[in-house]
Image (tube, rainbow, N blue to C red):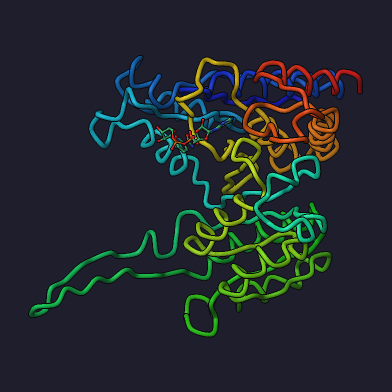
Length: 364
Ligand code: NAD
């Protein structure tokens, strides 16, 4: 298989962590006989410095011409005083809009080797945490009408929550497709006891269900879901939900897994092309020190293979290599335990961690 990948290294630790992800992708490519062609794209602070724009049109076009996009992170102190439209983060928003990615997928997975980093009780963590939240990204209340009116002495604020059937259907399908590539369990999360938009959500999800006989669809109210994520996270495989509920639940889910440096994400739209990035930022405080954890970016590359290129065995291989390196006790600073556990672990820098994971793949 030959695939073109647009590579956005970005700012801060971005170039370091992306470099390690490419090393791992190269190892997978040689193991399975694939060719990955990388095309560098400037976005964020580096693009402001070079081109005076966080995402020049030519750079967006490079992304649109690729089979998928791998991103490190953008932003930093240096560009904080740049006017709003020229901020590094604007490049990211323009990229998401330009690529039409309406589905943000964020896995919540606890690695057994890092179980002690979870704030949950050991008896809950032991049952396993491995689910994905599929969040609608460009609709709902964040994109509805917002206004504040003053009638008499009192102000009144209004935010409109609107969903069309087709918006729900397209994100619902991503939920079903994601579930069928995993354990086949899809939980649709809404507030249908109160909201019309949620009742429509539920109706559309159930209309789609017969098209996916290999997936079991269940419903859950969002308040119950927030509770179940901390009470019994092992019950979830894939959660599909609207924009604001997904925003809140995905932050809750990332917290229970331990470290921000471990978590990948994907954003998908129509077709197979996706945007893959770790959930953290450019971490300027540790940039250039070779201490960043590259695993979130490496796992984002694995998601790209699984969800955009339909290469599940290759994605499994990367995840298994990460697990093997953790089993051997290797830890970047952010996941280094304290106390007695520390004596069983070995500290690795960013490039060493990438090299260890790629090394496992080379061994096959
Ligand atoms: P951050 O995620 O960059 O850092 C938060 C903390 O986590 C820092 O202490 C950092 O050192 C640590 N950290 C983050 N990633 C790590 C990793 N891979 N390994 C080890 N430690 C890691 O968040 P922030 O400090 O609020 O933001 C820094 C910059 O990143 C800002 O300019 C912000 O706008 C930008 N940002 C970009 C994105 C993106 O590109 N998608 C997302 C969030 C923030």
